[in-house]
Structure formats: C-alpha cells, structure tokens
Image (cartoon, rainbow, N blue to C red; front, side, top):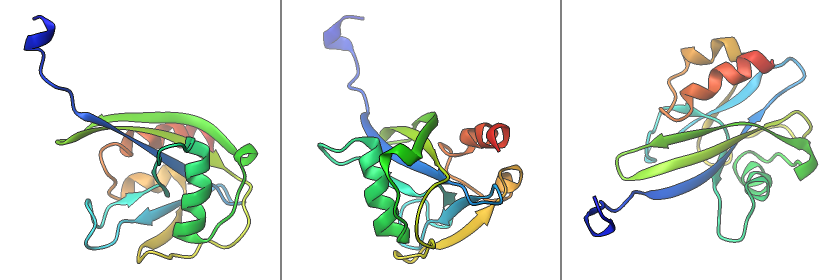
Length: 141
C-alpha cells in the first residue's frame, strides 16, 4: 500500500491521569457523572492535556479544578501509560502516582469519589483504557 492508499489515522487524544494514594494505600477513583461520555464508569482523576501544557501541569490544574487538591510536579511519579483505540480517537494516557498532596478531595464537578484498595478496583466498572492499569497499581501498592 502506498501513501495515497493509506487510511487516515484516528486523532490522538493525550489525557493525563493520577493515582492519588492516601496514607492507607488506597487510590482515589472518580465516577463519571451523568451527561458525560462513559457516564457511571470509574476512572482516575485527570483530564485532557491542553496545548502548551505538560502532562504534569495538566494534573496539577485538573486535580485543583476537579477535586480541590493541590500538588507539585515533584510529587507526581510516572508509573505506566494506557494506549487504547476508541471508535473515534486513540487515547494515550500517562498514569502518575501521587502520595503527597494537600487538601481533602471534594467532588467539584458532580462526580462521586471513592478511596479504593487496588486489589478491589476490578469491582468498579472502568473505561477500557483504565482497566489494564490496575495490575501496575496492585504491584506497586
């Protein structure tokens, strides 16, 4: 197949996610609210990387906007990433671990928050891109 016959690829969506870990080794999950794509599924806090932002800057901004938690780049440790093709785009999602943050996570966008032990995460339905990240958290924590 030559270049003129190649099918156009899906756009790549870069999303940064955070496994916020409390002192008991639990990870914060956020349930997507009604009205959003994949509503009702549980995910790691985070969001789309905006032009000019690093994935770490995105998490600092999103954690503050979504759940009222503050952290710094030095507190975000890269763990792994997801690469998943959805129907209309391809998701690339680095997952960072954060154990040092200030503030008490509080839902600010209509979502539900829950602290969950990694071994119990499979009890919470997650988007297809998030599910393969669970074993890395089980091994870590």
